[in-house]
Amino acid sequence: MDQKLQRPVVKRLMKLIQFRNEYDVFNGIFQVGESKDNLLQLSWQKDMKQCILTVDLDKNKATIQYQDDSGKLVEYIP
Image (cartoon, rainbow, N blue to C red):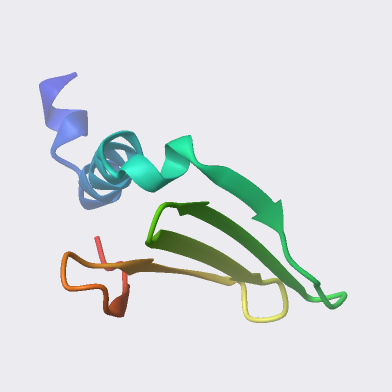
């Protein structure tokens, strides 16, 4: 079992789970944004913090943007 936890995909998933559990914005307001047929946008906001998940179904790609400690919107990269 420990060997499977060392796989890169599992490590990235664990890091994403940790981000989700520790970033307080996920305890705030959740919204589903205006979306096109191929694009889905979900957002969370609490106080002055924000996190946006954009899923592009045509490109099979998801991006996460969130506000860092300085208030700048940055892309989450596990």
